[in-house]
Amino acid sequence: MSSGEEVSSSSVPKCTLSCAACFDALWFCYSPVHQMQQYYRLGTLDTCGGKWSALVDCLTLKTKSRAEMQEVLESREKAKHHIWTFRTPEEASSNWNKLHEVQPFDTRKENKEREQAA
Image 1 (cartoon, rainbow, N blue to C red):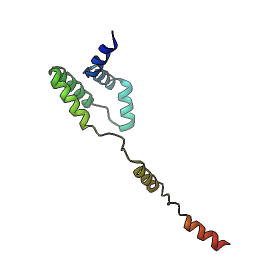
Image 2 (spheres, rainbow, N blue to C red):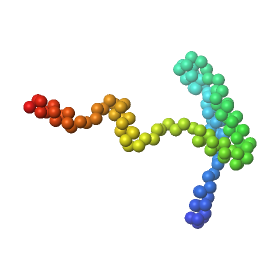
Image 3 (tube, helix red, strand yellow):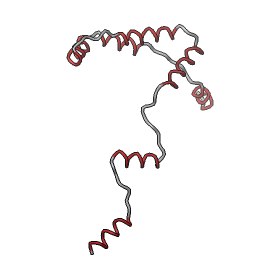
């Protein structure tokens, strides 16, 4: 395979949707280990409704055309809330100072205190 072929194949996003992860999650949900953890933590057994929904959704997506599936997956990715908040260095600095109650360094105040002590 030449490097030209590699570039052309990597430039086209490959949409691979596997429902195996959804099935594995559903399978584990019904395991005694998971059910006992849920009972211990919450006092109720898990109904696994969310896992069923995810599996049905995945299988439904598999029935759609490749273009429709790609469009749905892209729209979901854009709708996801990013866990990190990106800040400029100035914003990050001011947020850090506010969170940790850091007072800005004032050399004039420090010089006045030294003069008064002397």
